[in-house]
Image 1 (tube, rainbow, N blue to C red):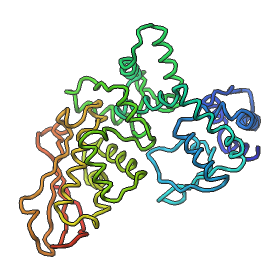
Image 2: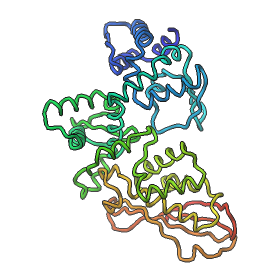
Image 3: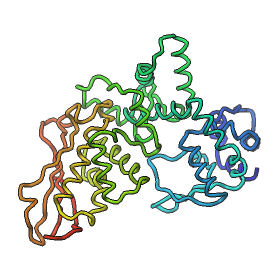
Image 4: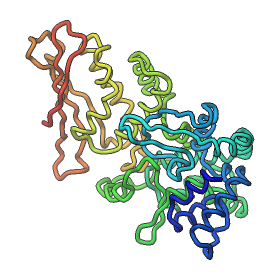
Length: 392
């Protein structure tokens, strides 16, 4: 158990108590740190099913991928919006020294402990609905960004045909004991909130909502919509079965994005569309197109691609709008405006212009629209082009 001892010894005693609580183990506050390290090591080695069952679906399936690679064999993965629990707790080895990717692997000691049980744990949690419940919870959190506990409970109960108080209590108990709920929960001024793991600052979301006082209520979403928004963590996608989503999928596929890259890219568009557009966020939301500019034959195709992204972003739930989309609320909409002569031939040094207008009428004292002007440099017949962005 040398590896387990090393893992737990790297944490403070207070953290060890939290780890025990999270995995449903006795906290044993009377133990000294070295005794707590020994206790947790023994528990993790002797009863792996108990702690594996408590891990979120994303974590358990990452461990399964590492088992498929073999003990000590590394996977090189992108950095997501938020880390897995097993990475945070150092249960798997994690090397973040490279800014472009993280290197993860499963030590042989952990490999030998978990590999005989991983498939049965996944099958059990699929069969008893644990992962479905987790996807639903994560989906609602991703849709709303931040939501009070009481409002969240109302949203969930509305989607279940339960009238008996004992059934409602049982449902709430299952939700409250889910690992995600335990992690992504905090309080402000005696009010308890749940927040999406993709939200960088949930207090900011709450304060910015005051700018949209016309949005009184949270939008209602069906259970199947929450499940859609909560699957494939950490790269969660939504409304891909709409006309806008299908056009986006087709466009990204034509630009050469692989299936795995598609989910990350579409997830990023959703996240980047949540806030007011400035130079940096505009660059981010359209980066999937600018990164593949060499594949675009002309400016008309470039314009079509960014319009496809804008149309998709405008149908997605907004955290600041309590789940309503920009199209539904007629707020925070991205609109594309191209200069009249932008499709005509230009000289080598004459830029083509794309004006991206963002409705900030609810965020400022005036009613004007703030525009971001993209200067697109395309020589006649040039297939690559270069771009830079300036603020109007």
